[in-house]
Length: 92
Image (cartoon, rainbow, N blue to C red):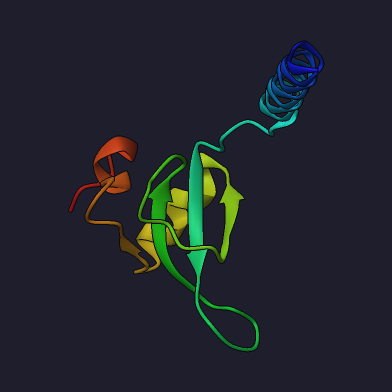
């Protein structure tokens, strides 16, 4: 009886690990640059982030390097945590 329970527990743990690994493999790659969007109609951009920035909000979209540079040039602020302006070489 105990052996059956242990076997079932081991099988369930192995299945969870296989599912976790499959999720890791299926996850899309992190973008290089992200623009955080504001709230409201049209969702205006409010901040530029490096792709893996922990401070980027949930409303965001991936952008190219050129789009990130253009956004900074248009006056959209750079994140103070990940400093995309420094990473892009767009200081000043």
